[in-house]
Amino acid sequence: MTAAEQLYPLKFAPLYMMRMWGGNQLGEVLQRDVPRGDQPIGESWELVDRPDEQSVVVNGELAGKTLQELVRLYGDNLVGPKAQHAGRFPLLVKLIDAGERLSLQVHPEEATCRELGNGAEPKTEMWYIIAARKGAKILAGLSPRTTRVQLTELLNSPEVENLLQVYPSQPGDAYFITSGTLHAIGGGNLILEIQQNSDTTYRVSDWGRVDQYGRPRELHVEQGLKSINFMNRTSPRIAGASDVAAHNRKFPLVNQCRFFQVDVLLLVDTWYDDTVVSGSFHLVSAINGEIKLVGLGEKAPELILQAGETALVPYAFGKYCIIPLSEGEVRVVRTTL
Image (cartoon, rainbow, N blue to C red; front, top):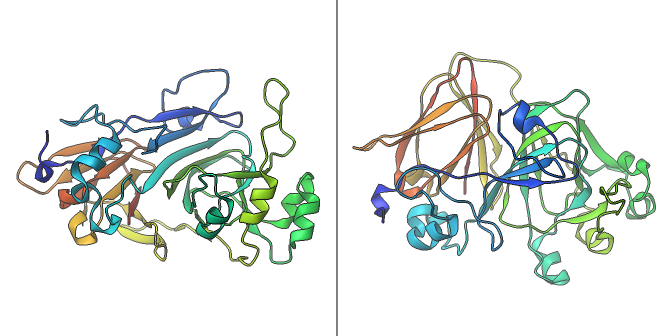
């Protein structure tokens, strides 16, 4: 077994999920060879430690190990002291490929989970837009004048969209979706999603959609309405940088959240970093180009990531650098606790 001091950046096999609203940008934009089935692929789970789904390492001596096995074997050496001895890996990373709009949905916060029971888990998440087709939209948050009565009356109507904050999708923009925020990802979006390790979603509307057998999906209107934070009308959008510079830049996307911290790195040269200084593992996600992760220790292990891929850099790894291999400004999303 690899010693803790020899832990290295880990890459995992994606887990592809068929969804009726799935798209084709995983293949067209990220050049993924996605499986074919009765429905299109809508999600690629890049990093997951759930009872029913497990990421498996594909590189180095730990190839074949699940993420849960690594958490049990290495503990703080993998996740860092900020994880507070988590029994499972605290975050879940997905790629969302929306050919059609997703359901109008909400994730509960902690107090609501306690009220609802039945294994409900809180979920706060962040979206980073990798690519967007013309006309793609993000629906996130209630508009300032929307009331509970209006929302309840219009849930089954297309006019419910008028009660939401609606934004044109722009690659490089991010959205911070706190638990209790009503939201829907519009069709034509390819998104990197960083979220709490939770799989609780309450659908309050599915836009009248039915599956291939003519059946509607289950809705959770009662639980959903209890989960919506009607007091929160802030904008969840975080605008991306609109210019290109000749030097490396770091922009915070989420830095006031107790569940995760997210920065976007705009790189034209080598970026130096350190997991130990941060007190946490790092998740490094290549967005629009190829990058190389290189350790700065004696053996200096290396890992190459293609656009759309995410690596877990263990806390014990320490000092490392990110080298952009593609031409132009390479975007990298870096997540810590």
